[in-house]
Length: 197
Image (cartoon, rainbow, N blue to C red):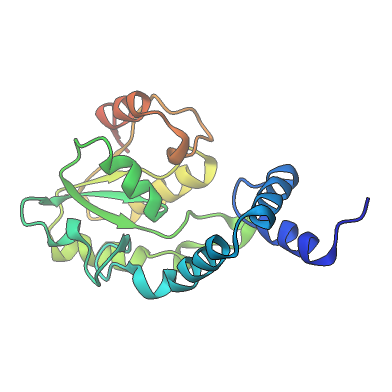
């Protein structure tokens, strides 16, 4: 059976979201079709306001309600300890542990030559500037444990001053793992077991 054009368009659009396959997209589309107009209007308004209400922090490039996020504004943080992650949601994952008291830097991805993503496509210059500005003593590289994440970690190590200790999150996460899917105990072991690169 052929789907009506409007429903088919929504299903195709929803499949562009990460982790949403054809079946999930179809279920969501039918759900939205059966909900009251007020719900769909509120959903559309919320999505439409997303860019107006959520800022990218001018310091660490995580997400925030303001131009500088609360972590970067927190004077109780150890500004000489920096955790480098690929995406803003990785900051939320590590923060949920409640253990890390340093600052963050979001690269915006990982080096991936196959997809034509080089260091110049990431926030590497900003990273190096912040390491110098805050006189960072340790950089914890918490990129995903994939070939791209490893390449990114090695690149960061090669660009930092020898006086800066560079550690990598430790075992507990398998190669190819995405931080967003790790359970808290595994992620805590990975943070505790970080190692120097």
